[in-house]
Length: 122
Image: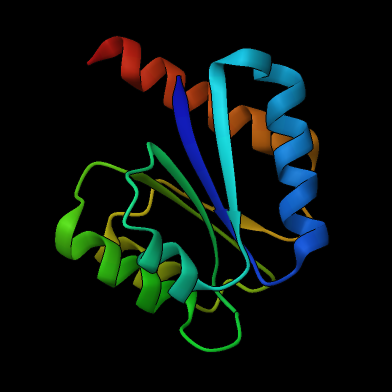
């Protein structure tokens, strides 16, 4: 089972990502949605993949990622945002990918496939 977190203050965007992944991967994923970075951090759960919006009320996605990295160096962090503004900062937290909204179903699945391939090769 692949544990996935989607953290986005736009619930509609989070649910869209969830639907795309669940349809493709059916019973092989478990997905939790958090509407704030604070809630993700408070969950203290480990996630294999973390989809993380950058522009959120309260703690930003970049700040959330930095906090995650203090205890977790393995999760694949995928930023989802409306701007390229933080692309260079995303490298500081070892982001796996950086998706610009609005993104296509194909773009989400391409990222997921890349993760699967990397996991097989390791």
